[in-house]
Amino acid sequence: MNSLKHCSTYLLSQISWLWCTMWRLMLAITMSIIPLLAVQPLYAQEGTVIYMPVAYQGATDAGSLGSFDPEEIYKNGPVEFMDEGEVIYSDEELLAEVEEGLDVEASGMIRAASINGSSDLVKNIIATSGRSYKLSKCKKYENVYTDRDYTFTKFSSKGYHNVLCIITANNDKNNGSDALLSFDITHAARIRIYFDRRATRNPSWFGNKYIQNTKKIYTTDSGMKYFEVFSCDSKPGRITLGGPQRGSKGVGSMYVVQIVKIDASKGKTDCSTKASAPPPPPPSTGPRTLYVRPNANGNGTQSRPFGKIQKAIDAARPGDTVYLLGGNYKESFITKRHGETNKPIIIKGPRNAVVRGESHISSGSKDNIIQIHHNHII
Image 1 (tube, rainbow, N blue to C red):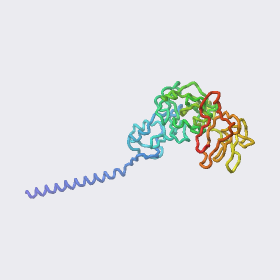
Image 2 (cartoon, rainbow, N blue to C red):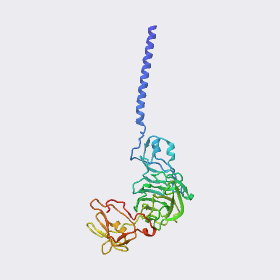
Image 3 (tube, rainbow, N blue to C red):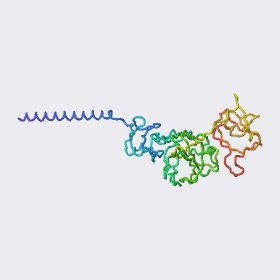
Image 4 (tube, rainbow, N blue to C red):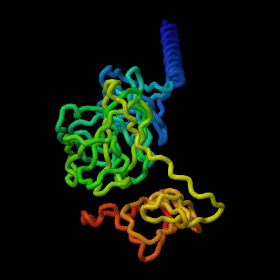
């Protein structure tokens, strides 16, 4: 009897050991298979573009963009990449905060922004400077620039608050090109430029298109204090805007652009301000001398000189010389392109060739007459 009891106990212990071993083995197999079946989360690396879904936009507005910090993506865990245009976040509340489609670099800076959907208004934003711009709403307490901590504090009209803007980089404040910022508008729109109120002369590309109104946009920038507003009612198309220093004086801050959808009957103007191509230079196979004489109207030859220094600068190529004939030049000018190490662009003239600037004497201004933005200019 004792022998039978001992045998039964031994069999039960062996069965128990076998069952435990099989259970552990099954658990190990299961744990090893699950990761293979699941979508593996990939952490964003530098240079990776994350696509975000588009939120609904109202028919009467350019879009509803809320404040958004791209760095929040990385605080809340990994991102699982799906098809282009889709992304799944580990934190669903974060996804709910995204109200528009934005292309975001892994560094957290917004390189370019586009609005997709049935009420598209602004897209294909390009800054030739390569700096980061973003599409957002201009509103109180939000940043004025992508690279500064200044914020908006007051809008003198409700029609300017919480409205779609291209938020620029203040490091572009010294840009003097004729094509700094470009974007497409797909419907008639009022293009508003928030411009530095300290300007004593507005950019030449404003022309007679951008007209100042009485509105002011206040910021925490103690130097500038507030923007003045210039606007143009544009027809649909590609809009190109120059740099803030192009032909201006007294400008110490970059501008901000606001876009408001308007009735098609009001948008009749081409508000793009890209300057026309410079006149073709006189034909030559080697270094040339381009002559300038005040108030002339030629093509740059000695017998038919240019009438403006800027025209000669626009036409000059590496190795060329811009020669100012005697006279008083009441103009300012900006370099157009780089020279080369062994082929600098040379600007020279006799002692009686005097460059005074457009309003240098009458206003007593000490603003720059010559703006050099390129290398190898002598």
